[in-house]
Image 1 (spheres, rainbow, N blue to C red):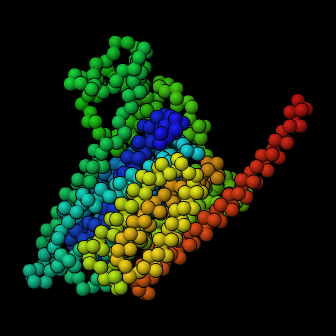
Image 2 (cartoon, rainbow, N blue to C red):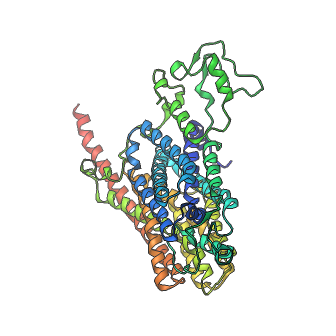
Length: 555
């Protein structure tokens, strides 16, 4: 059996919450990957220059960082967390629908800023809630959470591809002789996959800003908005309806409509069902939109006004760990600096936060920079790979990350986080070194890209689960780590881009190798510090027990 009964029972107890958070992260993945492939068509839509449209990338990345930093503010209560998730998923759906109406680069930047902030809040809250639900068993569910990010990131470019312009999408007066070739546009689109960080070496591509706009990219965004609103998300749980004698199915499985049972019903707020409501219930589609899934979860958790008057339906919810409904110190990055919360904390408490954040700063920075510049490296000397073939590298890398996270669900169950992280980080170092050695081999670049994605895929969820376990879920680890990862993905990518621009494409692999070694050294230091931290905690507990024993004897 792949999972033991304890893990399976945990999932069955919390499946409405878990599936909701997973579906929310699918929306997160959709929003991450759509901008790179569609950026040239959006340039046509806004009739802006290439330098102007790349500010859209900056807007999204910066506000994603802001959203990650402040996302912990909504963690104070479960209601505030779920409300934040509801509005953020709704914002993402609305942004997808509104983007085709943004005909100026400033309006598009504002829309992407809103989407970026919503993404950051989703990133922090979903990770926080899963850690609180499962605690020591959270690693496997965090791997699944980030698998859905990769799945959304894979779906988004596939949806956009049929609607991308193969030729110039702004036709000038003499477009028949001077427009850019499809080959140049494909090269430019693949170069811009790195969030607009590499704009050198593309000055020969002529792009019009005045003329007739012939892009069809609007359909891609509307389809993605529909996918976000009609994906197979959390079905409304059948245990929202409890019959006094036996369970009654909430949705009719036959062609007949659901009838209200004649026995006494205990419902959420005693108003969940009536004769008319049963007809509406059967008319609901089997696939609920993500925001509606969040509302269904709020109803299940008795957080909506109409459901406050009745007791919780499931006694199983009372078996949750005490941390599931209480604030264990998590908040925004700024609230974590509250002196009242930091008083009497040992030095190792702060070092563990810093080291965990630094590791994810490095590893997420490696992911962002590799995905952003592997195409630029492939089409440059000495490889000089064809544009079409080089354009597949980014997709292969993200596909490998998605498959790696799927496999890590099982590996996280079988092995501890330190073992999994050791193998992953050593694998990243070996692959980067081999890429340096065989830097003239196109075949090995494809192989190395695939293996690198598999190795680095599990690092973020594993570091998050490991750090929270060290701190016993009492620190600000999730907020600090998510913010650090977002910062690294943005800043390290800009740093690597500037080095490539000044030193050449070979420095791309060298930067990745150096960063991999630094990340592994930080991980070894984290292992050492966590031993000190736990020994100090053990000594403190023993001293506390010794002080309490005389008091017990006196009484």
